[in-house]
Image 1: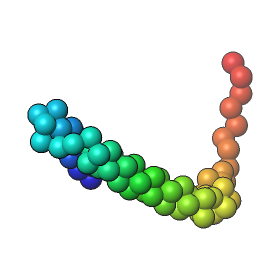
Image 2: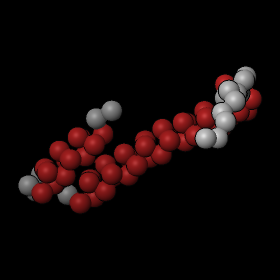
Image 3: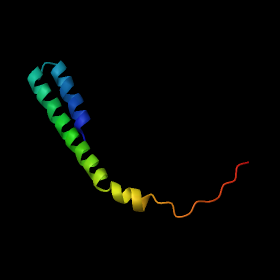
Image 4: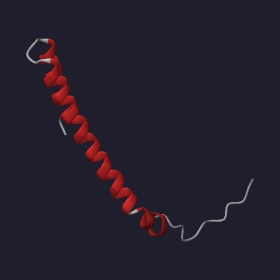
Length: 69
């Protein structure tokens, strides 16, 4: 989503003295919060459909008989 390139670009600008340390900390914190929110939504989505996934989507209707050799 462009967060990693933006962070890299701004860190390079910080190295060139275009930003101060506080602005870089604020940017990193913002990216962390956005990333955690996205992960939280993914986890919540998987958790909410976990019952359906376990009972309907991953069911084995028939299993072929495999004999050991």
